[in-house]
Length: 380
Image (tube, rainbow, N blue to C red; front, side, top):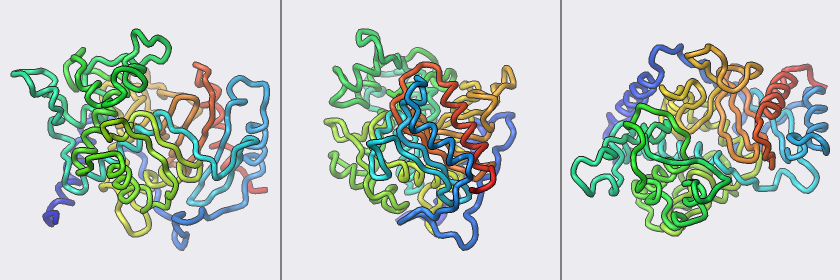
């Protein structure tokens, strides 16, 4: 049983770490409240008539055959003010299709970390207890905090490349020599920078976190880890068919692999839009969504804690992703054009799933911007 003072201490810890990351930046846009008398989407999403322009945009996009970016989009979905107002699927896909997450799984890893913190089993401000960093005296990696891992500021060497297997740590970890125990593989790599001083996107740090989550949850094998995820995160918010993947050690592959429907991805995003509460239940610690969307100090506004941001780059004042997108947008993103965007100022969640392998993401950001704009147009 947790001590009665733990919730207050948790809020204080999250707030202090969020403020430390925030520095001199402005406070984030407040998260919107659940509309009165509107049911939570635990079983089905409440619906509203779609705006005509949004409906037309979705229809054009999912039938596009020529544009190199848009022809790979397979699912689009828009939630506004708690209601499903737009949804469409390319031929061969549907509301029942489970789509691969790729790196959107990292945001699920953030949620699992918060659940363990709320249970008093994990302190993100403490040094991460990786055994590889304590086998020799004065190993500088022992200074890495769980918070540094969450913000991609661990300082560990990790080459996030998907083209050259001889150079890529990501490919070796996911499909090569590190695949059986991905957390151990990533934790065994040397430091390239002092912990907490340099931002570098790394799937390895997510799998170090995933291994820590398995240990702190008490799971000893994949089946137990899956049961923990289903019981503590997915089922309480109405996600009944999530399929996470695990390595041979039993750890969730928290960098890359979980499969869910577009409507279930929207539920996950909605949990964050509602500050970690679902109906009358607190799933994530108070302030955990703010923790996710607060810029990492060295990320130039583009990254929070396992979520991507469109915050202003302190050096230029320009939005990190696109000037067309709201600066309060925070997003789970994955390889192939997967995106789950939350926009607090619009009380909106947008899901975009597919197989878009173009390097230039600007057209997909423009599509997101068009969806935000048309979602606010008059209903048909």
